Amino acid sequence: VIPSMRSLTAEEYVEAFKSFLDHSTEHQCMDEFNKEQMPNIVAGGITRLCHCRSHKAEHASLLLGDSLAGQDLKMIRILQAVHPGVSIDNEIVEPNPQHVAAYKELVNQAPDLQNVSFIWHQLTSLEYEQQVKEKGTHKKFDFIHMIQMLYRVEDIPNTIKFFHSCLDHHGKLLIIILSDSSGWASLWRKHRDCLPATDSGHYITCSGITDVLQRLGLEHRVYEFPSGWDITECFVEGDAVGGRMMDFLTGTKNFLGTAPPALRRRLQEALCQPECSSARDGRIIFSNNLSMIVVES
Image 1 (cartoon, helix red, strand yellow):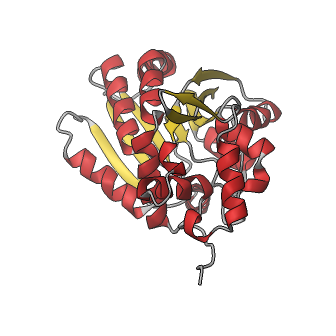
Image 2: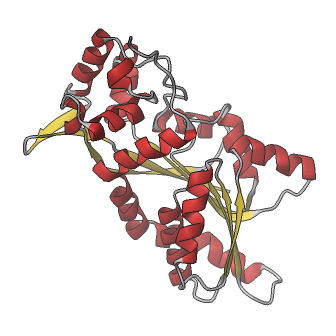
């Protein structure tokens, strides 16, 4: 008897996501952005903020949503390099307990993070918003990021509007989302029928976000960075890593073992289409291009 298809639990998602990260250049892509653009992004607004505040010590506040701990700490170190001696209040909104635990462990292993305080909110972005509104404590932040998290929020326009309202004067909101040039965009646009109903979340890419920003009248800039995901093992029968990657791609537990053969075949064929993937040295590389959107306060 073939078990029925079901969505990934939070724990299963973490495992599937790790397989994706291990075989993609997503973090290397973000590293390129951090190296090329982040120093300028945090230089402008936060410098003006630090010098116009009445605090005796220079000070910056960060709010990091649905966080990737390694990327957060890299951004904090860039901020420290651009603004030596700045005290940083860093608040993290992350619903997954495993991600929170991993983040805390990284912080414990990082002796170079002087003058940085950490507050963890194990909440979804909506729960955090509700908590802020209920308590009436609308704290302002110099820098807020939303890395690859808008696919899972209930109301994208209102989520962006709320977090933008949390920016201090001259603050910046960074949204990282899949590019319109990515294989995901083509898969979602042309081959959505290949994806199971168990794949929850919004199929949204950069243009969907910039449309929202334009409707909200928010000034923004978009930076495009190439990224790839080696999905070769997804086509190897019985391969455990390929199975976990297909679980991540479809949001479904054991997709290869539970999906109807026709659906599985259609999805694998769609993944091989030139608008989704390219062949490189005998490997199948799925386009995972990212858009980094910087929104002004």
